[in-house]
Image 1: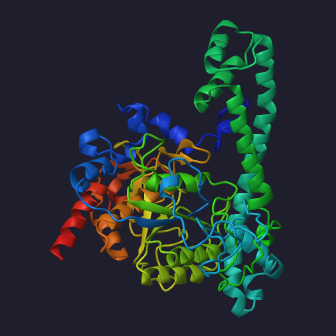
Image 2 (image 1 turned 90 degrees about the vertical axis):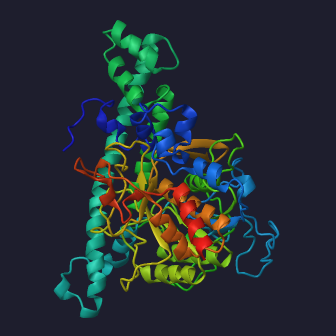
Image 3 (image 1 turned 90 degrees about the horizontal axis):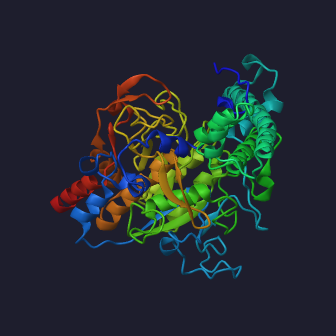
Length: 545
């Protein structure tokens, strides 16, 4: 149980406010690396650099320098990609058969003006869905009129599977709603109390800005200004430059909390009318619009940069893959993606030539999983590898299923799907990211996913954390293998990536706990993906044939 706070600068005022990236960066600051190395730690090598990266630099330097490469098309199913980002523009896919903005479906594929990709969250009038409800909210809203107040015995036998889904979704919805309401109240209280304190201190000190140094001096020299000490602690813990930056972060967190309460966890909220499709028709695939960037492309742009940000150009961050093109398929809102959109996005990517699909999203319920399964089977039939994030709940997915799951509804393993957990740059008890899902049977490999520096919209860059970041690392490795060894099939790519993963037996905290376990017990391979060993294995296998 968390101790109640007595000050807006206490622990709860920061809850959900600091990004995993900023927390991770401070936690790992003791490692003897330069700022440049920290920004590209995922490319480093354990033996050469003392960092459990994927040995990208070593692979290019020692194994790939004299080999020819063929560009590989990777689709990023995500929130959208900023097509003007300086470090991505040279590698973004462009469909030459489509004329920009002429309002004509030039290649007759059912998607008008899909020059950079497609947006399954857009409407024909150009509007976009930004925030969606969680899947448990949608299920609760769909069935509450039919099942609310009834017991299982009172429901027709033919409806009991739906009733069971409703009961499970309702419990998850109510739990999440309670937590969201509490968080919204805490942040509202923090913002309400913090702003006047900052204004009071600025007035007393005769300044327009408060930074950590000033507050620290004031706390030691002006004991009558009792708020200075807690205010200093707040800025320092949050790694904020000044009061303005901290208030901006607080208000951003408050806005997100409000959105969660009013939209994602509101059973009466339904933005789908913007799209104008028939949500229950899972065979309908030609809907949406050509705005593959969307209203908030931060997440997708970051993932795209991890895969293929131009290497060696002195801008931002280097991607894993050099010979790559990136296709943007927007299907992931703020909230839970719909199964129909995921299935449509996979099919679109496959039909437009993607050889690898990066999927940094997931949820707790999948009521139309059969549609996603069918799309994944279609991708398998076209020799396309799917790379998916394990999730950020600190769950054992052997016991708690997250979707898309690793098996079809018939319990058969999905052969062209690889599932990725997140690791940090410290070969210590913190090697497994504290937030990462794990599973000896359901997570295939781990990959760097803590404080990964990459591109963000409007030519900016940021360090973000999550299995969302680990997934494009693996997609990038797959793209390198496919570009240098184009004969490899999707299942061979998966096999090579798994077999070449470097096993670690470091004693680590099991994610979400303080229990110590062998890192090797957290995934099927027990290892972290490694480009150097993957290239070696690919070369051996292709030469042998």
